[in-house]
Length: 476
Image 1 (tube, rainbow, N blue to C red):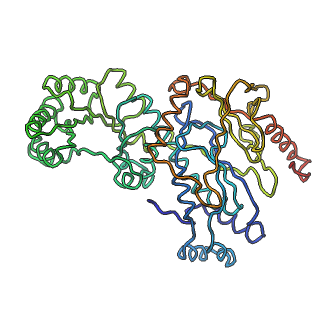
Image 2: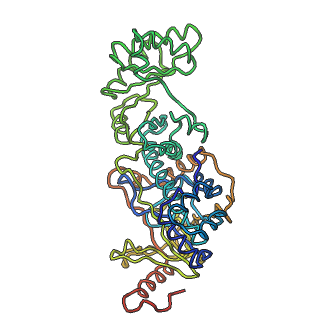
Image 3: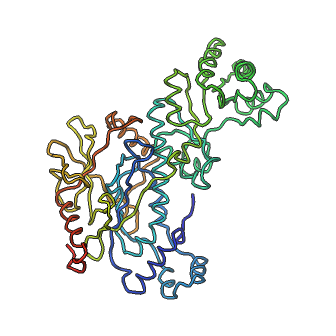
């Protein structure tokens, strides 16, 4: 498990925190919202991931002696450094569950803490949640097209440094079943999986001898890479020979792997040859620059692939590479706060909030989430956050509140669900999401709206901050 400390942050978080401290504002209470503005991959949904690692990191977050000495060398004041010696996060966090479907604009997670605590943890929070949410979303898109076929994360070697560690975890949240990443497997309880590299086959004078040695060492988990030289005239015939030898010794060849060439055609021909050899149980795994679109194409071509090994596109979140998750102040010193912009879509939503999900009479997602003030009752109508002429009557829907307390006074308040439970949550929610939101081309836009009371509060704050009115009494 990666160990995070207080300096896993941006410099300006500490310069702001020092100012708050020296000016006597460090105990002021504040609320920050984590949300994002654009669904990645041109899709219709995102999958939330990274909460459990964040909570565990926050429980242990401190500044050690070496870090304090380093900050002293950067010119930070002695009183502030004394404060940091005993720094711990003691705030409250409300959040949706990992594996939940999330959509733009609405809070995904809400931090309530002292202004210094909330500021110092911002970078760590964004770093962990943005990456894992991006990867879990990419994984879920692949799971949607792969169906019951097995998905394995092969991406560590192509990941952005240690980001691959959490990418493997997030892939499981999104529906993957195993990883080649041994460290992630150990720390997160993910089944690990691996076959062989071309170099292993190349290191032998004869391909069949490489296969035979590997099978003798791993008789219960042998998957043979058959495309080092010639897939159909060498690799597969040799794999069939080894499979027959394994049968004689009471074992079975588990599978073959295709890593190059026309994967759809090679998979069909491999399946034919294996079946004709009386080996219907031998599975076919495919790898090599796969993503959700390639997997869909292979299956549309009736490629009989049982296992997909996905690397680069998964762990780098290609082509988007980043989620635009942000962390914005919404309340401090007893008052709602707002950030203005020339674009209404960049104006933030003030105050403490709750989010309600609308379900139809069948229990399916109705395609609408409503953001309310925390103290409000269930909303009866929601307004488009940026278009004042659009609204939606909510009376006919069942409403489910989504933000729940997961940390209080700096301590985790629940038993952490397993990764398998997070994955089941993701797949269950996707099953309740109508197909028009899950398609890759021109998906339906999931509606996110704001309650009448929240709209009024936001609009009043916008007016209060107009030129010539600044300095007037803020709205409470």
